[in-house]
Length: 152
Image (cartoon, rainbow, N blue to C red; front, side, top):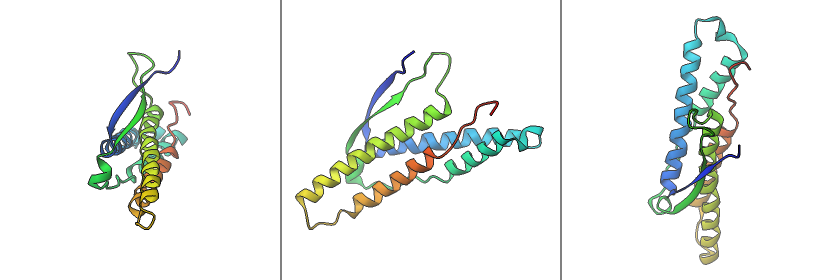
C-alpha cells in the first residue's frame, strides 16, 4: 500500500515547535520503555541499551529560539499518515515527520537568506546562519537515533 502524506502549512516558529515537541514526546516514550525494563532480565539487552542511547540523544535536543520576524514566515511541509486506522505511526515515522518539517524550514531559511544577501550585499546575515546551523544540528541529532524493534 502506498504511503499517504498530508500537507501542513505553518509558521516557521510553529513548525520548529512541532518538530521539537514530537522529538521530546519520542524521548519520553522511549525513556519510559527503558525505565520499565530496569530491574528485569531485559535491562541489559542490546535493544534496551540502544533505546537508552536514543532517549538520551533526543532529550539533549534543545529548541532554538526564532526571532519574531523569521518566526512569522509561512512554510509548508508534509507529514506521513498512518498506514491503517488501527495502528499509529511508528517511532521512526514520527521522527521523520519532525525532521521533514525541519528540512522545509531550513530550505525556506536558505532561500530567504539568499534573497536578503542579494538585496542587502553589505548587511549582516548571521541571524540566518545561526538559526540554520541550530536547525541542522537538531535534525542531524534526531536522524542519528535508532528505534530497534521488539526483537532486535
